[in-house]
Length: 434
Image (tube, rainbow, N blue to C red; front, side, top):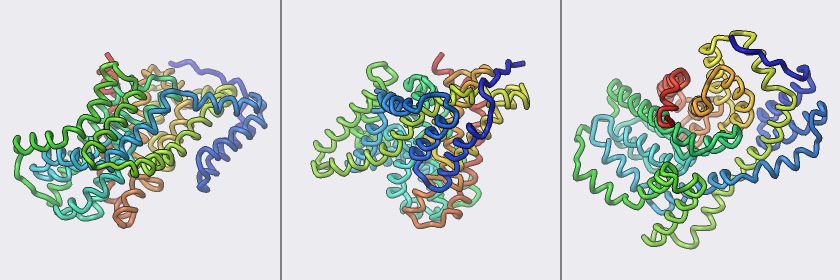
């Protein structure tokens, strides 16, 4: 039996109205940071829980975080990797590793998505980059174009699941959990999702007979691919090795990775000074969407905390049941549904502060909760109506989005099974921390 914290402020339209307005504005296509800014301003005006001047102060506090610098740097590293051609080298290693087996090129494509995730931290960036490089080759190997699109979109979901991940940086900042700790906790879960997608592809390929390479693994070919990709492999080695050895913080690792990638590009002659401005502009555009959202999450979280909204949510859920397993299922359902209608970062800043106290109430470790939430939200990247990866890949291939979504359904089911395993077996998320 769990304690039931009482909400200090009575729930009414002065609280529910602004929160509902945020949802409506998002449904109308208003940018997340604008919707949050309007909602939190109205919330403070109606409830007078905190002074309205809090917004300006909290905005500066929200962006004055060293960890946030890692986000544009990881995005910039991924862009530089593509422009220097090093991403092709990583894909060649993936193909040499898995490409000779049955369904091997499909598997190597997913593995390539995992490699790219270790650098960019962004699923959309990986989906765009890998989609351009692999769709034609997958189609030539025998895969239907819509299925190939679904495979790349699903494999790219690992962008927010395999560290370093922008989603883990954001949720760590919002909840006060160190990003480096979350990166460690996410290693096994991220690999589990990657393996589940590869296994699903192998099963579907066996049933439909899309591809049958069957050439087997050749050590000499693999070693040649690894040597050719030595500079590309150096980048994830610097990022992950530096973080886990304690030499770098995630932000410092991202900075070193950017410098290394650009230096290698100049040295190999695949990058020119003229390429730098477009790379910076591309990174700034992505960061310009994420940073204001994170900044406005702080005044919203403070306002909700002052109004005891998280305690009210806990009170209502515990009124339904005090069974921890059922409450975990309810949280998982909320994350999956939210991921289907909104992107990961807005979901994190809106939902995480509300349900995080409930997770602690039922005895979940902080890292376990974060991994469960990010993994569940990742399913939404290949699930309509939002399905960001679906939109990215259909923009590249021209395939109908619903057709691609149908092919993606088995991968959604596989990711859902992994999310349930992670939710109910905390060992996967915590073992490396012990």
